[in-house]
Length: 165
Image 1 (spheres, rainbow, N blue to C red):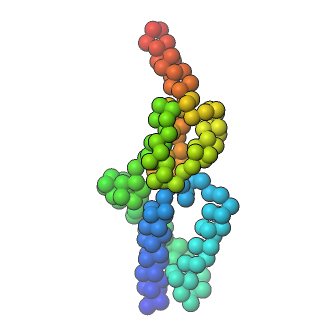
Image 2 (cartoon, one colour; image 1 turned 135 degrees about the horizontal axis):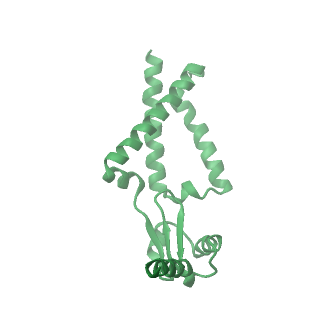
Image 3 (cartoon, rainbow, N blue to C red; image 1 turned 90 degrees about the horizontal axis):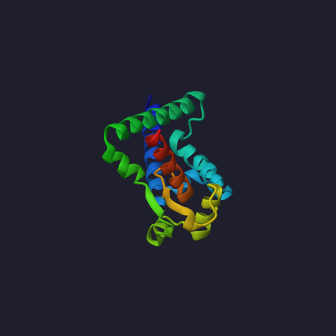
C-alpha cells in the first residue's frame, strides 16, 4: 500500500510539473509539433516514467499511474470550467499577432514567433500576404486562427444578402 501511495504522490507531482513547464514554455509547444518537439515529448515521457512509478514496473503500478493522470486531468478540466480565472492562469489568453494587416511585433516576440512562421500559417490558411489578413490569433491551445480580409468581406456580403431577402 505504501508503494501505491508513493506512485499517486509522484504521478501527481509530475503532472503538475509538466503543466507548469508547458505553461512557461508557451502555447506553440502543443499545437505545432516539429520533429524536435516530438522527440522532446517522447523523451520527457520516458524521463518522468521512473519518477512516477519508481521501481514498481508491475501492471498494477502502471495502471495506477495512468489512472491518477486520467483523474487529475478530469479534475483540472472541471476546475477550469468552474473557475475561468484558473483557466486563464493555466492556459493564458489568446494573443493577437496580426491586426488589420500589421504584425504586432511585441506579441510575436513574446511568444517566440517569427515573420517566416506567420507567413507559413497565412499560406496554410489560403492567403498570400500579411496585408490580406485582418486578424491572426494565437489561441490558448497553441492553434492559430486566421481571418482574412476576403473572408471578412465575404461574410459581410452574405449578412447583407440575408437582411435584404
